[in-house]
Image (cartoon, rainbow, N blue to C red):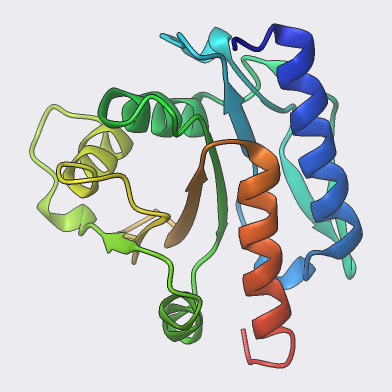
Length: 182
């Protein structure tokens, strides 16, 4: 079954609604958050839907800045397109705030976790293409994180087959860290 653009936007809207209503806003990174969903044959950011202007923290609320549209996120689109080269069924991704205190919770939730070191990035490649690919060689994990670099915020990326699955995984984590120090 192939999803058309309207169905991709509809499913992504469902995921954004879940996050808006139930996610702990402290999981939103300083640079903002996005969640994306790719068409089955995605080749460029034009084939990947996301939230225009990202999702931000507004006080204690999770607030999508703009509407859901194709081509809304170059960064997250590159992540999901790279994962699809290794497993075409993994068509959705979201970024959330990194904190050392979150890592044990990811393990407790039995997520498959992988990380990469931005300092080891070879010259002439894009960080996300290289970092994500380095984590997907054997299989695509549920979580890919990095601890940042000069001028680059550390980040956790949650991957999945569709955005509602990704949102549910973020909410599982959100429920675990509600009382943890972020």
